[in-house]
Length: 264
Image (cartoon, rainbow, N blue to C red; front, side, top):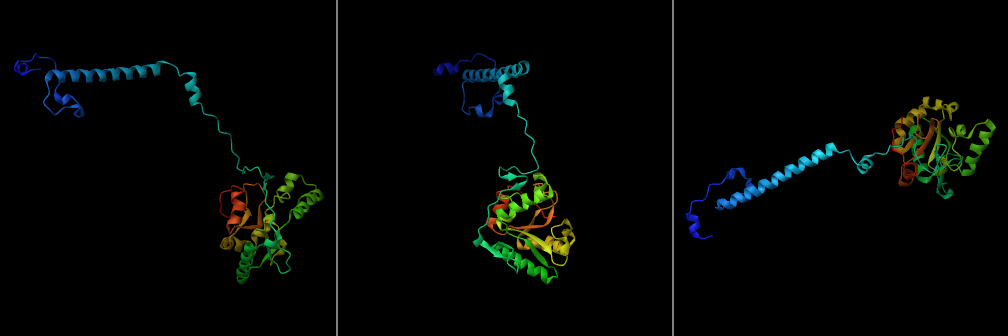
């Protein structure tokens, strides 16, 4: 375009004010009115097409039923009901499978050397007993480590003598291979001042149980089977287990996949 064309008065054409154009699209330089008009027309056309396309899409979504593919995509499968009891392939009648501790890892916790625990657990049990005795409480070990053979007698022979079903017997005694006593970390405790409460729920009324409820955690012992426990085992206020090192902690929590719980 030559200079003469600038001197001629341009024809009047419909145009939009510069303020009508988005700031990001403005050209701060002096522009030729005809070109600015073309730019505005093009932009307006594109915006119009976008609006028409959006309206068409909304109309088609409202007017057309969802396809089979979309229906299946949003279908949610029902969640199967969960149980309060733990799920583990190594569970039998509510009890978990445990390895048997090696005799070389055991240490006596009674004067007659009948009852034993793993060394770390034995040392802490002895320290706990000494502390309790200083308070006038006598903690007496009733049972400690048991072999699978020992548990065989306690489960099957006693079950037969009492005419119990397997499920009923499992409420008070674990099947062989599934007792915490196999680990060398579990101990049954009685009150030396009230032996009539041994292996009875009445043990919870003794000074020994009350002392344990307050102080056992200081020595890394916890109640294995509190009331309404997830395993469905009968309440055993006398049965305590050691969880004071990595091996014992993994034995009872990692293998069983149980969350920590407060001691009642």
